[in-house]
Image (cartoon, rainbow, N blue to C red; front, side, top):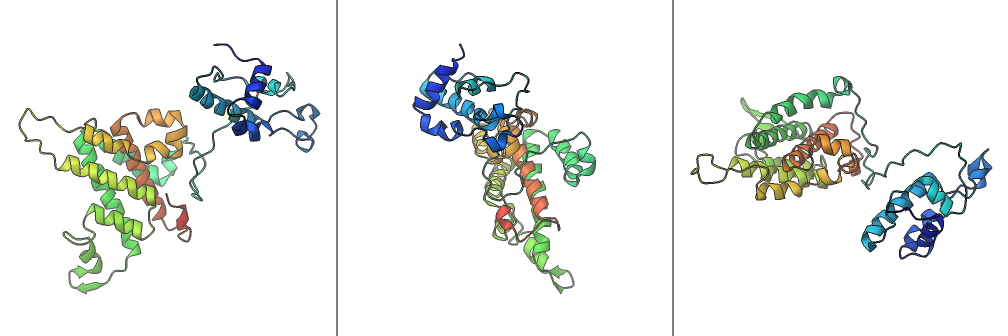
Length: 302
């Protein structure tokens, strides 16, 4: 497949079926004020605009089955503008795609994991032993233990938000709420209460509810059933469908834009999606329940 000439590229950008979609980026060029001491830049497309034109042309090319979706160099898009790029100038760095629209959620920047970060970050100090235990479990063991762990995390996050008082010698308000057969003794009750108290947002509530359903599906499966009955696994149709519906493995910034995260987390497999969502739910609950979290900004919650 050949690269288009600058003239062909200019024609498809300005007159093609998606010209109106590309027009704002095609007009995003360096102005005299922005060129500084490099007047040759005036009128040249900015690197971010050229990147966006290439990305959108690739998508449009696939949609219209054209041959315009090759990954052209920045210089070719500049030449299509009728300008020349100084050969001594270094090639602009690849522009990172913008994060998804989280409203005013604060974690918009990609997380850069340094080699020794886990030694300093409290969430990783808590996370590594637990995930190591889950990795050694069977599918059923991992699903059940992950659900039990989140139940405990929700309990500890909810307690500081609820008043307590000793009623009798061995009876308290918290005991009446969290003990067996009480309103907050169940996983679903704690998930809904956390949402009602603005501890979690819509997406976290959605994934926690799916994790609860997956945990229940594994818990209620009887391993003593007749030998001919198929064992339930993450690859089972029912479980895989629930894992595919999880929000975090498809929409969280690192999962969506960082190939290394997707590979390391095994997001192509239902168990990988389940474990990734489990960690994100735990991380968010842990963050908003720490004293340093600005509780007046509940619109940040995912």
